Image 1 (tube, rainbow, N blue to C red):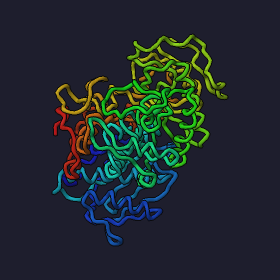
Image 2: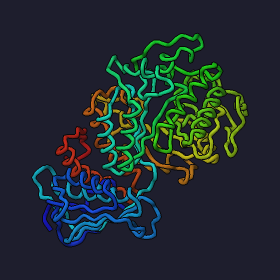
Image 3: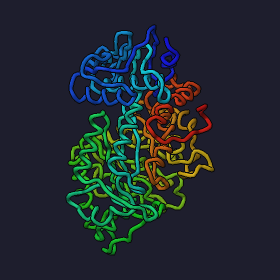
Image 4: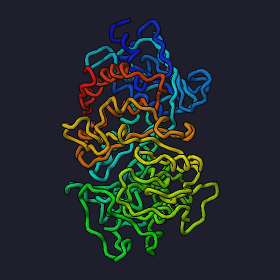
Length: 526
């Protein structure tokens, strides 16, 4: 085996369940892909072409992709499982579903890139068998495109990056105080009046309905689901600027280009509020190809818990009525903010949720204290856990009610946090988050008493108050996104920090060759 092919056993991120090197080397200078459909042939060819391989219709080294329910680790029933087999005769990827086929090709791409390092290595891979499956179904990135605008080309680049580490959700934070980033056909003023603003006077923008569909289709081909977030009942200054009837005075609010949070809100009892929510969420649900719609619910610092609970109930009802599964930040469980000492005294224990009975199967908080509210969580609603400071009791009640959790702890998975105090980009309110911090955590250990069956998965998040360009964004994502991806995919027994450090150093050759900006953390021997 050549020296380049010999390093492949330590090249794959995230760490697979089984990787067994064998004897022999396969030349991949030219490849011919065979797959169940033309789209998979094209996508596999695109992935392998990024290594420098020539993709030819006939006569190249065979790369055969086949549907096979027996693929993957022994006894696995995971729909994303796959087996990659490389011999001196060719490459075979087997999987029961399309996602697994693409995962197998992504693994192959990493193995080839590992051998190349920079640009002059041979296009070959050592013989190997990989059997693999993910730990969690939801493996994602939450991306704020409001504080600074990132358009369709940037978003497609993010889709490709997410996919390269076998992540399968891209959650877009599309509305906030600073701007509105998605066309809503029934409410055109949202983009007519509130789409061109951003932090510190930066240029804004928005996704038209056609652009939004095209982005979703691009992601869906790559087995990635776009999850849109319309954040209510706080973070709504862009909405109240466009529609003054959403304010008690009836006057629109001024535009806002700062970075403070918690000051804006809707009002549940205004006549315009419920029709606005129904219009917006019904349009978003109709425009969205995937099964989830995120309604936000975070950082509503100036709203009484009883009113907030009514919003949570209403938004879930609208989203489910439109045929989608609701997603919300953890506050929808009725949890206080860890920093809410200034919030008004909570409602009395057992306060009823006004405007509606508890949905069948749902459970209301049975205690409201220290900022907790009487929020009602429906079975199946997905809660995104980000603030590790509040008491865990509301989350356990939500899980008992049938809620699922996506883990995004800010002190581990918020990739807009500065790496170190002197880092020029990012914030530090949650923590300084170095690469090891993003790697060394277990999603199942965050909320004591939460059954692992209630954990849907893991999501990194990046907020863009200080990020003005794709280079800024990627320098905060890389290498930390790879660490979160491994936490989401690989079981704890398969994770090893020293191995990961070595694999990141190898993977960085691909970033340099492809021109992706990354942070050269001193925690890696580059």
